[in-house]
Length: 406
Image (cartoon, rainbow, N blue to C red; front, top):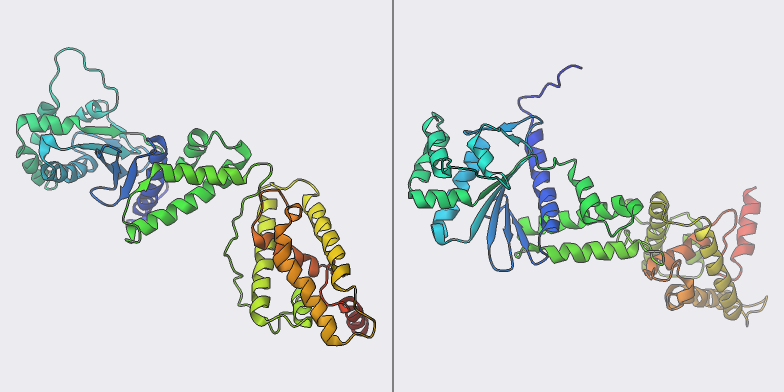
């Protein structure tokens, strides 16, 4: 296989790093106590604040596959540079800081950085971290590491040791493409396996919005672990047997809504009973949301075979019963104004009253109004003949129109 060539001007790895920052923050926050808060791009890539006020600063490095950290790796020393300034600012040994380096790379076994990995067992008399760091710095001729070494050497030996003991390197951290699976497998076990992909997509969508608000200043406080837990729990509830997820609330069609010339049958029906342009606009939005929501449920295999058909039968039956009441006093010779008024009464019932009838929900806990309203419009748009109609003589007139067309 030919080697993959990298354009020297490519910012691919850098771009991945920005996305990696948000994804890893979500993963790590889900693994910490719920009262932990995270800030992005504050004192470091990530700042984690625990309930007692302790602060953990995390530097993130999403590296090329096979990358290794050695004594003089710039990834490590750049992070040290940041941490040193925070350490000195916050009172040195009296500060409440800890430092983490998350890297997808691997620490070389012969590097003193291996002493900064988790659960390192120290046996016998070995050099201190200060001695190891000083020895590594002494071999460096790097212009980047030189000023960092100077700042490091401003600390006393005790402060150097204290500073280094606060550092933890988490190498071989999950790569950006592996994080979703890690979250699904380790943090979402209470959710049925077949729903985890869709729940994760929704969770990450919410998370991305929260991160953007924080980075743009629209949100000043940290994002807490309990917020993630609450949102995950809320999404999980929507995937239970008596519920369905609502993902099209507030969505609108991509194309501009034209209430005057829209040729669809359900729109023509509303025009026939004199419904205002604003209400027709709302109806078109409800139709769009209900149609797209049903399609999303179908794609996620959330609907039982025949469930939509049975639901539509229930709506059509209830419509038929109220239609008989609304049209009961009409005569063959009733004026057009009376016909339109009766049709408007029937439509008003469908739009505003049916939502109070629990038996007209597709499932017991699906109470989103657009699902019901939009479903009536779908029935009113059915071909070759609408299953519900509003104007008492709409079907007769439709037959005349279709007959003339033939």
